[in-house]
Image (cartoon, rainbow, N blue to C red; front, side):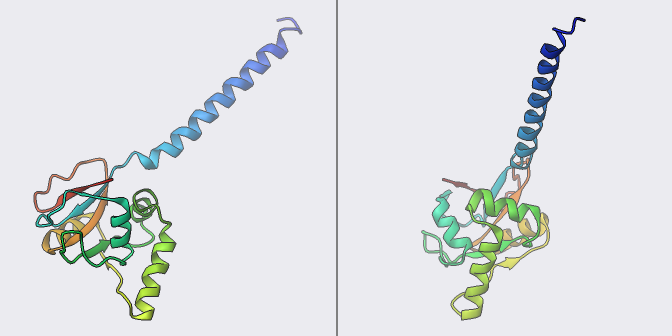
Length: 155
């Protein structure tokens, strides 16, 4: 290999390394988004779709009932759980600590209450299915096949 060809190959090698690095960054950022977030509700709820603003109002406990008039009971996973963080950021478009601050302020001032915290996905499915007006979320690539809850389309 002549000395004149070395810089050319060196530049191509650097370009290939940068390209592989960029692909890795894109893949790493896409990985958390690959799990689907599903908003679930008690099957008696008379709505099939919910706007992001309505969902944010219900989960921030500002709205106490759905548009059909039914009272809402909100179920969430623990603040530090990855599914809760993912739901807060992607679906509600709120940072989890902001959501916690809203709940704490309402409880402290006596103007509202905090949501019901459940520990697992299975408990979330069970509690939402058993509670008229129950609403929650699950994160996972598998679609809910539990007839005891319904999924809401978020628009």
